[in-house]
Image (cartoon, rainbow, N blue to C red):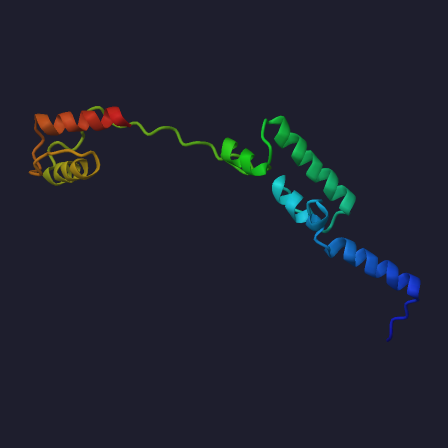
Amino acid sequence: MAIKLNEEELRKYIGEVLAEEVDERFLGIPSRKDLNNKWGYQWDNSLSAKQNRRLRDVNRANIRAAGYRNAEEYEAGEGHRYGETPTPEAAPQEFPTEYPYKADRQKTGQFQTWFNQNMGGNLVVDGIWGPKTEAAYQQWLASI
């Protein structure tokens, strides 16, 4: 089946396609993709262009109301993308003030090794919980 178009319909169709496809950045106007990225909007093809623009404008207004200039700044400042629910931060982990593995030479040796490598310590790695290892543990607790 052949499609029959008159010249007027063909010009109208070509004009619509060009209007959608031309990268308007050459005209100094940001493209749809640029605006969507700037305001953290995902274009929904099931909605009309007018509805999509309105929803993108809502994103822009909310991001600006929060004090940011674009979605990227919003994400950096808030710690999550615009429109996403922030993940609750985990409660800070409580560490015992007294090392629970003092009698375990292997775990004590592991702590001594870790402390030397990560905290710049100079402990003898012997697996014995002495006053220097206790002081190192307290120093580590104070640093977290």
